[in-house]
Length: 432
Image (tube, rainbow, N blue to C red):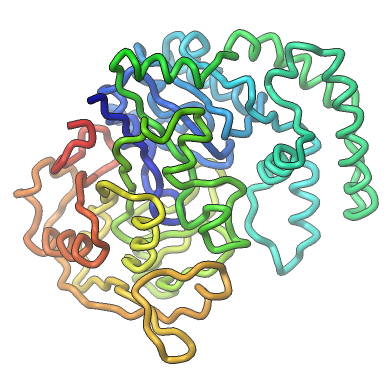
């Protein structure tokens, strides 16, 4: 049986998905991005050289692979073409020839960005931490059935009529709700006319192509963005992203049947981080948290925003395992824990009424009220940087990993001990 693998973030994003997708990609004939936009950065390090991707799937560095952007993704044409130009300049071959975009993708245009930024500015102290890249408004358009989609680039006359109506809707909000400058029709059309000639050749029936590949026995890799706890339905709402980040979203976002999703690999950082606003039960405000941030270089690859750091939260991960059906975990950044005398794991929460729970509740208010319950484990002084064998890990590091498995209820398949593709320990290969 052909095995296809879905890679998702199992925490609040930034778990190191890009490296693992790049590492697994050589087993496949295609890598598919199925949700999100250019508000997520996936960092790859190959031979010491760093590449940051935002929209293009993390298999693009494998020069014989096809890469796909499914209809669950909202696409900024300017950001996409800028990313392609960066890869071309770096010597990556035939990027535009290997990249296929679903014509049903919603297009992010200047008015989405303008409204996103105006709204966030109006929220004052109630900011939700949006990146201001137009992702949310673009998904709103999709649900409201007014979005301009990639297929609309094929008929400019119809597109212009559609754009006039949409722009009226946006400018009313910008001017009268947010006291912001309106977006001009001619400015938006100038963007569209500039990008359309390069975008059109990349449009393809992604859903059909993926189905045909699977029928031929070719393996596929589905790449998620952000993380489970930022999911629009199951995350810490309203401090969430605008799409479904779960493994199940790969079916709708790529246009494939659920039966094609055979193995779910959850990427899990050896501690916990979060970017932007929202509740974070295990967050550390002391020198320990600062140390994790420094050693882990915890800054967003796209936004540059500092990430908040805290102890490993097994109760939150248990929720991710449940809603994703995680087959195996990949633990990343284990090396950041080197040199710590003691390490704490959150195994559950105490609720305001005195009751205890071993799983993350839904919604920001409920999570905000959770008081973490910790277990303390001994740390290790030996270095794990670049270790490629499980047996070579310090005994206390192995005990830490074992306890994570026990508390969360899912096996560890992979351990990452550094950013480079080769710094990886394989316990159970997802494609095996």
